Length: 453
Image 1 (cartoon, helix red, strand yellow):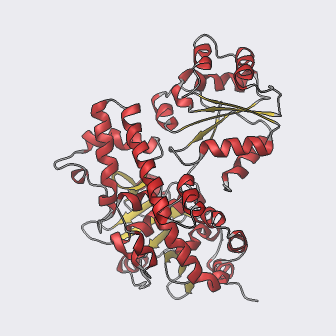
Image 2 (cartoon, one colour):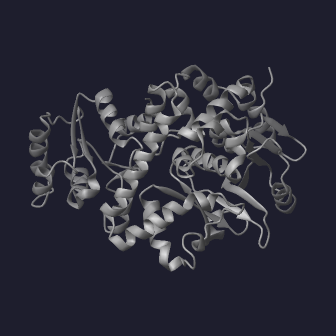
Image 3 (cartoon, helix red, strand yellow):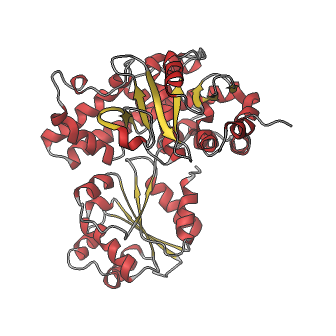
């Protein structure tokens, strides 16, 4: 399967002044496969070590972290020639060995000619706990589940993906119904590479996909006990298992009382941070007013929690596979949670910046996501789960704050509401939001979204 992150890895390989790289991502997002594929495609040699299987190097690291001492050991253990520029060194599950993490500092200072990458499923937790880790000695790359475009490529739709990437949203209209059908499949299957592979290798078998999702969820549950003390592991499970019911509410603000009756922030805040650092959840905080910079108006006590993968959300909610065949069921069921989860995932990949949400105090009015365009102006992104696009929240927001324009994404086809300055983007084109945010003026935006011939 093709992963877009291979391009980021290639840029890192060729970059002057390159630092050791740390790849952060949840279990089963494809870190190991990607790094082995990258090594096979871009290097002559791959020295791959997984610290959950190798104890020899862990023992050596207890006495030295100097590259001159480690390189012969790595070569002997992997049977690989250590050649600068030609050999990729991979330390997988690096969170198991803090000394291996420390060694990256010395590769940076004493052996910068070597390409070395560390990766781990709970690496974010480790970095959070080791605040003294040298700043400026490593680079970071976050790996997430497969995007919808990557899912389409796995389905053999490479030409359609290229067309979507090369053409503006208005020009994709002829493929609207086909893309909605594929999007419903993605809502159910998600982007975990093993799940996607099971689905397509078994002739689009939803049962095979669900079985693999259940295996991943069991592995996540085992990780709670593996990496956390028993009492804390219980809190992790409680928070994790509450997310589908939290998202099923009309008001999706995270409520501790929905984790456990009488639950309080001081009881579960650390568990939320652990899950976030492990890339198992994403957190979107509220901004009290949509002013630049949004960060300055963040309310850390009001937030929404999303899962790392839409397919896992479908599995945890026990959504029936028969819903994929129905016209709008997956979009509107579950209080539109799948549509909002999908847009969160696409924005996380496309924007590479923090997103927020806004809600009116003592009201059910809410803007699902807020971000900033390249000029720093706050931009509202409304997510609609149906084709009825009327929205009192967006209407109120636009009348009160008078933004230059707003975005709305839904299963409906593309259109521009010039009078109200709203651009309607089909859900499957949510990745285009980044390109729209880079335009300077409303007229330029209209031309980009709806070019004339």
